[in-house]
Image 1 (cartoon, rainbow, N blue to C red):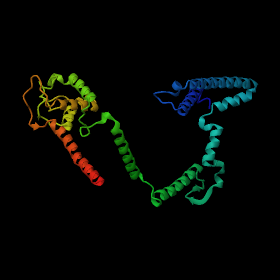
Image 2: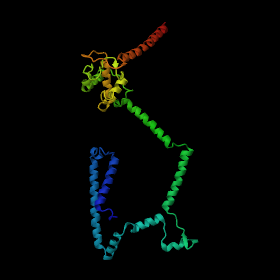
Image 3: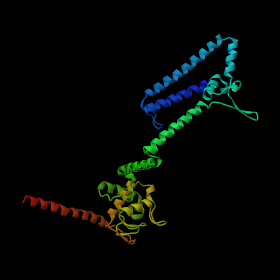
Image 4: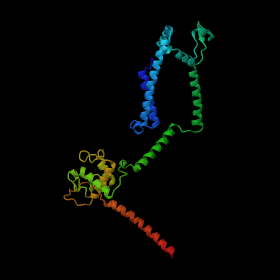
Length: 323
């Protein structure tokens, strides 16, 4: 065996296997090996490498002593065995004989059957044990499979796939609830808090003033303060326009390659906040779609008004009960 695994192969291979085992047990990863967080792992690896080298040195010294004690005939026999091919080695032959139960040519007379076809005779060889074992395993597996999936109604591959997809969708939805940078145009909201508007204004001043002016009055790009919109107003339309870009060949670039969805949402909110303001030199109105920020404020007002009658009704009910 040493012929196929010399010392310069054995030592690195065994050390690598031991290292992988230690990393797996200690919970290391490719990005952060275990010895980074646990310096004792380095000591353990060093001791193992030292033990490997020591064992190899002791084994080499022992072989040299034993060789000096051997007779010339024993040395010749040892060298003959070392020069045998892998398949001719005694232990390999014994293993193959146990796995196949083959008979030698001298024993074929015991296996001859009475069949004789023009001088061609048949041998009653045993099936190899490994083949018989595999056959029994397939029979047992088929019985278990039959009971599991056709008697007790176990989940087949299609059902398992559908369940996995359903679980994955639930996990994605849970993640999207807290992941700010996975906002889509349908999920974007009009942010009115000062910090969001300030962040949106900063992004606007860094990327948008060249075309729309600092006050949103418009230049190369359209006026953002009036109620006329080329691609539509509102959170959804403005978010989509900023993310995907304007009209092909005329409009602005798609900023989704540069800005995160959460940043686009803040810029969208800031652009909406510019609606209705008075810029220094406003550009003439463009676009046939009419929309103003008042629609958002009106929707909020309607919601507030809708809650007022309920409060009054509850107060009246309280007064009646007191009477």
